[in-house]
Length: 125
Image (tube, rainbow, N blue to C red; front, side, top):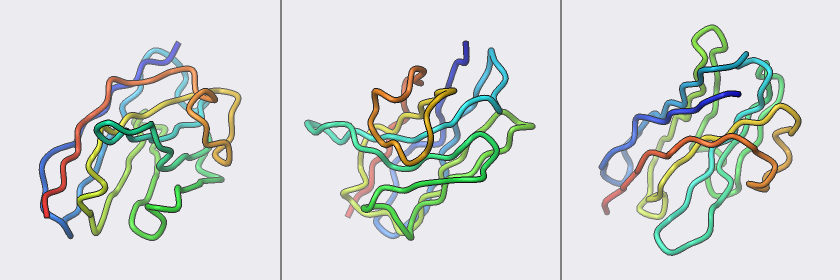
């Protein structure tokens, strides 16, 4: 069973960039599609981006298209989320999730069986 650990969050100013990391262990990482979700304070969890097992397909939420990029390095068991032009509304707890059987076009959280603990991103105006 895969285990996930996020890192890279922090406090930044509007317009800054940040790179999040999702490190996997405990299983063959290339068997899993991986997604990033976020949950702002007091709001529901929101799909951010997803990538297929060998990077052949990816998908983005409307609010981050053109600003965020998801990528992965299976040799390093890591998925990245590069976040540019950050806005205060990007403030949230960012979590990565993995599943063997889903595909990036499916954006519902219940499609993913394995979750990390999350990393906080705070964007000040």
